[in-house]
Image (cartoon, rainbow, N blue to C red; front, side, top):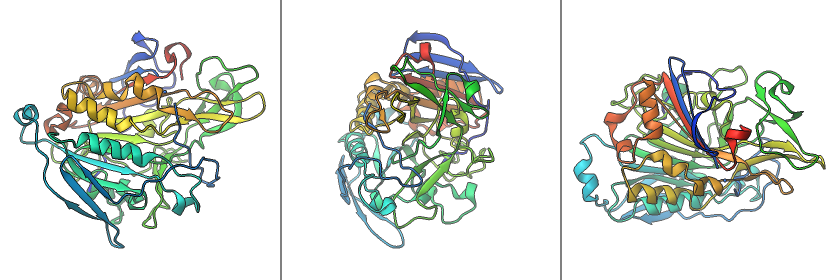
Length: 443
């Protein structure tokens, strides 16, 4: 069972992120402190992972479905069998290690890859109108990262109805013995955990705005490049974020809530990476293990609330990478629009190829590469034309320099070492890349 790290509030919400030393119009670095904070942003995106509305409006286009139950990659054959009690994993031959990794890796290192993706949303919504291409993303990551000679090995690879909402809830945080991230998304010995699923953009409200003052408390007017004639921006309110599963094996109505609930106290779900090396500083025990987490869902994190949105995430995980749509507007014809996360077939495999080609390269560079961002965003509906967004990487540690190192410098090999686990989360660092000039226009 995998455990997600819990994360403390740290420095609080950035409302208008300060900029310092931008290396280009799409890249910026921020710093600040709760006791000291560091953050970075990069800028650049397209094709969207449609939101699932809680009312389950059938507004998304049909998607191709992949329901393969047997995956083979990198010398490991994984057979997944449906069971009323639990999913059963059968592993075949072990992967060989590249010499450079084998020589450099210390005794305490993590090597597992966990992948959970949902294409088929028919159980949740009653038809296939909300299906996605997430399985393709996950399959491509799995195959590429577990290629022959890779230092990584296959952990859990669940798809469609085998992805359960309890996979993402930490039982130490929730107190619910049915929750089981410890054996799933945040299982021990995990180097990378990747999830692709629906989210929701229900935080976009129909209040038009030209500045934050128009939006009231706990909301903001998003920064964007100049809009088309007759278009006007819409407010985005702070609210809990979530991702959706679609399975008969559900304990939380196929929803994984995170961030702040309506009472502005943290939802307890994701707590990533807590293990013996990190210690149990986040109240989530020491039964996790994910060192790097990638979370791909609709409107899963917001530019003004990315600290609150990831509350409890950091319990030992080195960094979390997410897609961050930034735009919301009303057209001259009265249509309400927002940018959204797109499914992108090469999202995972691109990262895998970078990790294997240069294990010393910074992890964040692969996630923030313009190719990734330029294909990472679309819009919530036809007739909406601005697919603006940013990929973001966030890290936390006991010192400002430690958080910045995880965000900016830590390589794929270093991210496997348990000795690099954060021992606390008092300082944060974030970096992002937009698909437009967000140094000029903000977000």
